[in-house]
Image (tube, rainbow over all chains, first blue to last red; front, side, top):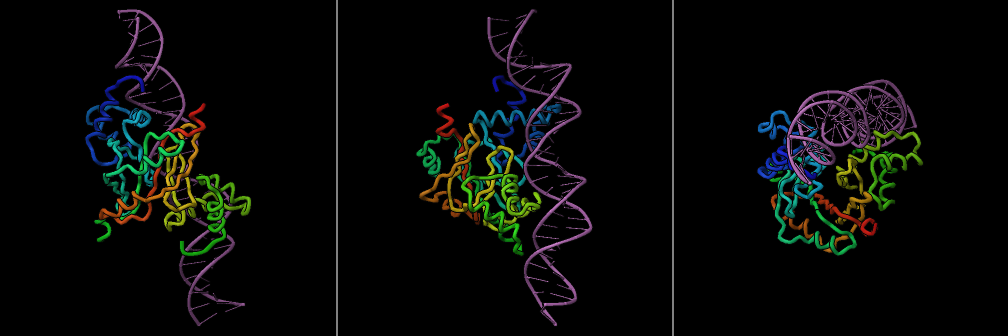
Length: 124
Length: 124
DNA sequence: TATAAATCAGTAATGATTACTATTTTATTA
DNA sequence: TAATAAAATAGTAATCATTACTGATTTATA
């Protein structure tokens, strides 16, 4: 990713404005409201570049889709096996990042996914 | 997964005996040494069941493959973007699991993936 | 402006994973 | 232990999220 493009900006804006963890296709549909003829391949290419550049996170929870997150601050992803939703939880201390840095491994990003059942699904 | 099967046992044994994080296909090739006519579908089905039963972990690092882990104790996965290897690092405190439990979310498993460059790749 | 490099839209291809079916294995019950 | 029901298997075909490709367009550089 060396050049600016309005497609890239629009994709990033969609991700910055949502607190969900959308798939490439959801982002595609959303960006099409602004750029109707954008191609799905462009969305995938830019998501890949934005992830490589550390501007967004790619989160995989095992549901068969790549999910993307515009919030790159250290936080925990709570994936509900009941409804499939991904919720966020802020971390007071980034303990894990500190642990990773203790090793000879040069870390740039850490992703946390907790699996379980959310409050709503527990009741039903 | 209600019944025993020798295929399931063989798959689990392969995972318990390695400290790598193999793909379904790698496990398939390994199990074929014992059960030559096992089918790849059987491997996938059992990996899915073993994961659901909490006997193994499914770890996704974004390389296009599902990786499986026979070690279910809380530990950090260090994924090297250079060589693609997944290394383990033990955690002294399971801080994140505690954080997850503070919420209304009933957690059963937490997976940690740190992205970066390993010692070997840094030198080259 | 002119040139080179990067990105794009549109479409086709890929391949890891899942679904399907007839057969075999396992568990249950008498 | 034999008979029955339920679950798992081997083998194969289908799926579909993602990637690759190509000629046209946009961006950066000077």
